[in-house]
Amino acid sequence: MLSVFTVVAASPSRAPLGPSIVTGLTGRITCGGVGDSHRNQPPLAAPAAARPAVNRDQIVSVVRGLALPAGDWAVHASAVMVLHGLLEEAGDVDVVARGAAWARALEVGTPVRGRQDLCVALPARGVEIWSGWLDDDVDALIAGAEPVLGLPCVSLEAVLRFKLTSNRPKDQPHIAALRRHLAADERDHDSSAS
Image 1 (tube, rainbow, N blue to C red):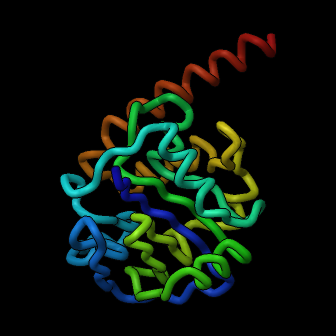
Image 2 (cartoon, rainbow, N blue to C red):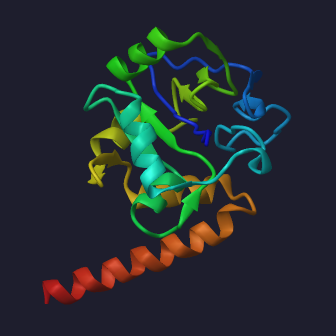
């Protein structure tokens, strides 16, 4: 079974770029959400109906298979929630990367213009590797990454900020789950500190 994933990466230079389309095995994959007029929307892959959902094991497998250099990337968005056990599955896997990880992406594919960043689409693998993550500070996201199942993941707080900024209908249950989880963590931390 072919799984489709989105991978997000950051390069040292992040010039704003326009949208473009990449055609892959699942049909149309948009780099940066073609036709999406909302500037703060996240990078998008193929329509959700065209993408099989991915579970925890699939996320771990595909991300490890990318062989991205350690220290230059972290999983982001809904995939982080899956890895933490907050969701059963995600529509794709987003990975924020920089430096050597972006160089690796350029070794395996040709970048095209996305909404704000470059996108290396690997349709045979069902992967998109991005040169940035909208207006986020990629260095800070990676520096704040926490290991989950052996994969560096941006913090759940960063995922919540992203989901709140995106504020799409599909984000609403994710926002609620993140708020519940983070509030429970805060209560647990407060009770253990007393």
